[in-house]
Image (cartoon, rainbow over all chains, first blue to last red; front, side):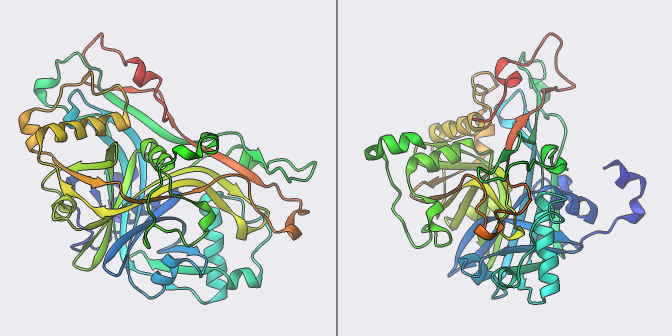
Length: 227
Length: 227
């Protein structure tokens, strides 16, 4: 964040719309590309909201980002993806939980978090080259370095994967950081207050039971950590 | 899960509806209460989907469960909560990521996860006793043991908190576990395959800068871990 303060002139801002303007606790809102992209690049799954016959649905799924485009994918048999490729309105949300904020009063308990909400319409990617690059982005989003090592998608696999692209145009972030904010009258209470920081951490990798002898986990797996 | 196999007669199943029936990879679907509740009890945030003027929105928020009721809360000024208390249809999704599944082919990469999707209509809780119990559930969902120690909500704070209740009636879970599933033709490739298990882990707690001298973090904070 300090970088943003040093070089404010380099910030690209998303245009605010009614939907992306944060009305609740607006001081937590961020509309700059750098913040939005950093959150998207750290996440592992997004939650996609869409409307079917008037009812909302929210489905978790993997994703990848290339520049100003978010890609999601799945089987053409997926009910969600079949719905989405019709060009319907969707909302994609990515949330990172950074810590639990313990105040002296129950009322002021909170979480430190970073979230991004994107509105727009996704469209199916048909160009094989763009599709292949999107699949690379899915893999590299989750395990950087993996794409170079695996058996790449065959023509049949490419054809059997539905890839949707959502332009990153209508997006905003919301960020809470720092200690609890208690009422002044509660500061003298003899109750511990502070933050429990949370991290997503990898345990040692588990070999596939079918792994051939002599094959060991590569460096990017053994030292895996989220950015 | 082994318990489920030992005592299948004790399982309470959610009735399947069109919306909760998993059509994509149905073998990953679970409709028993025990699985659904265990996922809900382990999560920290849910993603709520709702429709405003035809457009879907997905917002992350904290929640708590008491028996067959899910509670969410916030300020009466919140756009989302004002919308929801009108009794509109919502979809609430909780997702836990347990591991990254690295296959020999890009195509078969996956994640191990447990997710719950709930459909229904939330209603505002007006009874002060039920409201207070819901607030207790929010706190205990995140930090078990905390409620007994903090300054409890005042009458004004209770009045200033909008609590919504969503009955756990139309719900289902989806669970993937285990190693990658590669095409047989790829098993001989000299590529490492397996699972990178992921966990949410607490770092040492950070004292509030305003903490009074002599107050130390309690046991449930120092030894914090997710269930």
